[in-house]
Length: 392
Ligand SMILES: C[S@@+](CC[C@H](N)C(=O)[O-])C[C@H]1O[C@@H](n2cnc3c(N)ncnc32)[C@H](O)[C@@H]1O
Image (cartoon, rainbow, N blue to C red; front, side, top):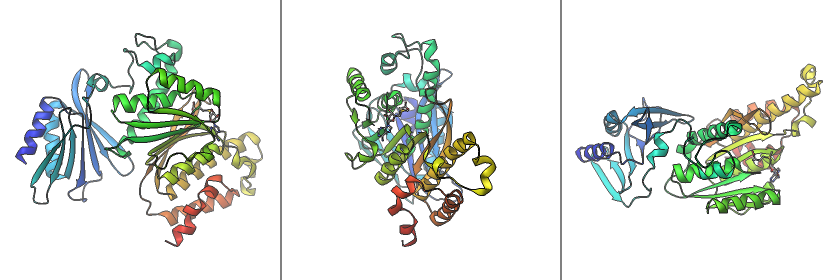
């Protein structure tokens, strides 16, 4: 352990850590998280280390002052984890600890460039005001000095809120290789540009991002902007979600306000790609409005406005339950949106293991049948749903 302690001491003392990931639990009893990710951040003008404890369906963050971090990391290796990857600008260190506490440290060439701590240090918002961020300047949200225009402040806050939701799921994305991300129904793509900036510049990931939309003029505009920004791995294509079949592997699918069942077409693609993360803000959920029927619910369904709102909520409940059955851990979060409706629901689904498929399926079918619903997503994923679950 001495060699490992020295390595951690040197890295924390010289603040050369870019990221560290600790994994492979020594024993499961008494530990509810499965991995810990660490990175430097600046809080109140002092360097801290942010520890992200990754549980099966949540991530708990803890910021620890730099002088205490060494001890915490060493303890995690001594008591909890048997593997680690520590990235610095000079080298990547792969750490393996045997059952008998024999430590081996493999030194590899660095996979990440030096962390721009100026970005991390200031992090209260994911994107900070005060220095110009090129895509925000291009989109007219900031001026060239980095000041957010007063009338665009809500947009700036919304972009940051979206990036916080992305930040929470970073530990669920594959590491050590480029990430492929698709944004279905990208429209003007404010959030696609934000995602690209955040992941490439702040998180130092290599990306391949595709935005797809039906509107040729909007796509042309987005491609021109990507080229002005030198976002070389961000491409925009014209096409229909349901017909898109260019990629074989996609790690994250984003679909924000793709209308009605276009959202379901995007969710189906994500599920078939086995995407690690899905972020979806549905809108115009009309499908169920024409289907729902329930004598018991007559006092609600006989009023058009209530039926419309109920149908939209039921549609998202159905989508979330189907994603759970299809092996995702799904959360519904509030997403403040300014262009479409003031409040929206974001479906955030992270690939996991479902050990309750049959019970979830029973809950789902009871709800579906009660409402007389025939959801698009169920039909589209029929071959992945319980007929095949039952025969497994
Ligand atoms: C309301 S806009 C949202 C744009 C952007 N995602 C946002 O949140 O600001 C919906 C976009 O989805 C696109 N869209 C709708 N159905 C689609 C489909 N089947 N295939 C591709 N794009 C679609 C529309 O052209 C439109 O640009």
